[in-house]
Length: 160
Image (cartoon, rainbow, N blue to C red; front, side):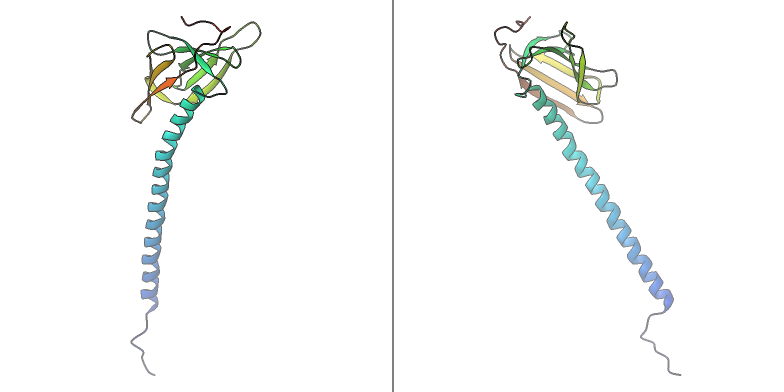
């Protein structure tokens, strides 16, 4: 019987397959963690800009009524509906719009952004239409922007 020295043994083939499997597993884990990191980096600015766009949207056409001296809440009036809203932070840390109850409508809530740190929302009135907003979302850096609201239209409550 002739012996062939240039062939692989079964043990060498199994070890080769194990090495390939380990390399493929490492590549998969690396790709999935990179995907997760990129999603977090994209999601955070997108939700911030959505929050800002909702407050400045043509749909609502908010006008600024007042910013509380504490800088934690502000009152807005929608020029499209004439209803008054309050921007504030809930106990769970979500920033939301609360529709103020009137004789013709019930209260309502619209979550906008969050969760934020305790004391993570700071508002500063710059002038009659502009407010500086600073938000510290949990586990993220401080974000700030200047919101520009519509001027108060005739027939709506005046600024206080």
